Length: 402
Ligand code: HEM
Image (tube, rainbow, N blue to C red):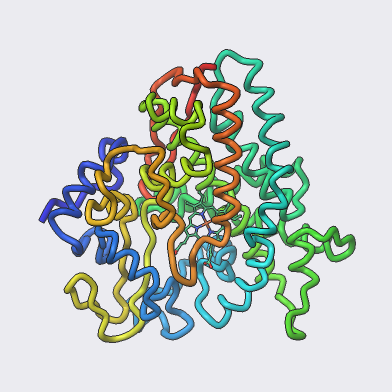
């Protein structure tokens, strides 16, 4: 078996794929001593595990912490835990089903298609500003303000508050890495406390002055006579704001880096040989913005890739290894922008399948189409480097010359 990579090592993060490929070819499953998890490397196993109801994102709906040899959440990070307690990503049925049904109404492909003119408008005005400069940072000058404006406009969050949301979200997501320092935990917890206070105030405002947008709708919903609690609305709003931009921004950054380094693929996009909608899928597969998701084994008898797993064990799915599995994708290391295979796993699968996928796809498509039509000669103005984090894979900046 290949050696377990050091997931926090900057050299590994700079290009994790050779090590992930080696690992996947040497074994479909291995025990990571350091994180205390089974790790899955192959597409089919990850695909099936995402859909396997004998595993769950949470266990507290069925077991107590001691049964899972885990401790209760550390009270030092109480605000962080509170913020995700009612997040869709921390829930299993029946709570998950109830809240997801309400959120999903807003994110149907049809509802998202109706937002297209708004997205095109946000994109065009930001690209106008970029066009005035010789170089611009795709992330700070375009993707972040774009993506946050989109989700804020859907939720009904005032535009002037979006910078605080970005700052809180960046601090909070550090908690999801395999390597997090105590300083980062303190910062994440403080950010979560501020985010909660902000969201609670927002809910109160929407109750007194409803605007028909998502937070307002969640605050007023009566579903079968049941209302969502303030804690549920707060967690839901926060997960949408967080999930709603980090991964989209990083897909644009990682994908544009790929296109700039593969000029022939960029040419195929700028000439219209490959349309932006098709291109989005390969940007998501080839350098996924989210590299790992975890599940708890909840039932007896779970065997994955021949490995028996016990109730209480944790399974980590290595998306980057699975997305380059030659058993599923021909010539998987090749960045083929016309591949157009939408059945990758970048958006997950099963009951937690990304509720924002139609929105994310449209955001990336509109952005890529705008960039390609305005700036066909776009080039990297400097070599971009990745943030030193494994799970959330994204670049620090992507400086481009027009
Ligand atoms: C390219 C961008 C995106 C990627 C790659 C992505 C990826 C994912 C993945 C892999 C999951 C499943 C996690 C799991 O199974 O454990 C997920 C869930 C989720 N995503 Fe996304 N996402 C993106 C954009 C968005 C956007 C734009 C939104 C909201 C506006 C969003 C909201 C959510 C929510 C709420 C969940 C939890 C769903 C549930 O548990 O039922 N995501 N996303």
